[in-house]
Length: 103
Image 1 (cartoon, rainbow, N blue to C red):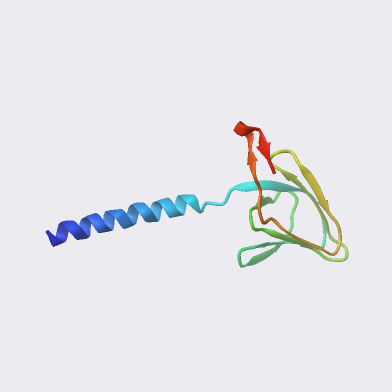
Image 2 (tube, one colour):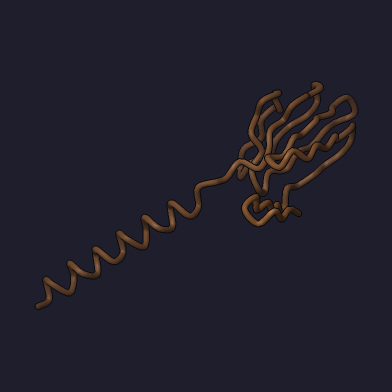
């Protein structure tokens, strides 16, 4: 009986673990379309120079120094430009094409 309980518990933990992993897969919310030198992307604990074509994810932070600038196109077609000496964090993004709703 103990072995059955442990097997069920192990299976349950595996199912929960798989669900968490699938749910935490980041979703692309946009792309960098244009980049001037001096722009960086801060993603989780990593910082990298921004490059045209880079995907943008929720919670990414984009910074530009005195010479940097970026142009972002979101998946809903919205475009935004960020000029020099700017910091922008993607705190939230809502686009529901089937509901024709965006924010």
